[in-house]
Image 1 (tube, helix red, strand yellow):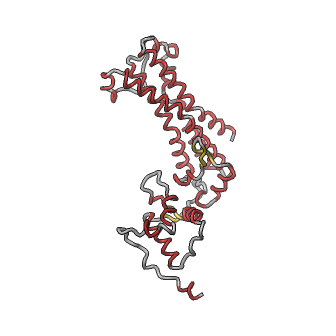
Image 2 (tube, rainbow, N blue to C red):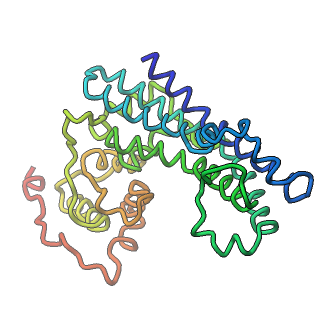
Image 3 (cartoon, helix red, strand yellow):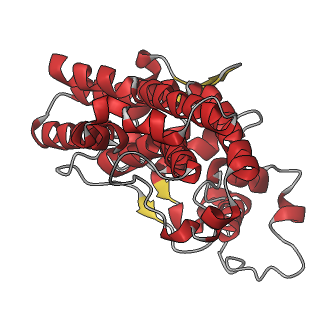
Length: 313
């Protein structure tokens, strides 16, 4: 596990590294557009004029760390039988996501500064051929301020994409859906933060959040209708006596249990839809008639018979 933690630590400084590079490039841009120096002077001496070193610096070589991370996780999960080990992997990824998210504030400030430089100081001729420009120019010195500003913007955009890459990795490697990943975070005044490890293990111990390693099968029942139809089914089963009424104060727990048993991902209209919250709204006793049985809604489960066995008892 030590070598894996080392990869995570190296990946954790990616946003900081990129922001340092972007800041250097912005400082160079400022010297050029203020007339303190020329593009020729400042960019011909980058890395002692070594084109190969320049290419290594200004291609996202360090981004390969995230690929290493994915490959390491995939390799390990093929052979891991210890749930604690898997949970530790996932916790490290959640922690990395938090670190990336909290590192984005200076990136956003740099991005605004870079956009102002592009709008104000880059020539109209360069802007007219922006679609033809190589993001990482092949040689030194650079020939146009626009090349420098475009390169800076590329770094900043990649930094902003990193939290999304981490979420994508969690979804792909651990077979967790968006709602399930959200459940693994708390919120503090600085943004999302992973739940404590003991809570993480408790959540993952539930059937619906069991990490899928490729040898385990997803045990949820796929729902083929929409979310309103699912809510109608639960309501009708309750009305007809097939399931007990949801006790007062336990609606949220009941909804969580339903999500552990049923795969409702096909009901999501958007990737970031909050299925749990939507179902909660449908099943509130005071809201059912208004939100489920609307004028245009075609009822699907009115033919369910009453549970006469329950009445006989």
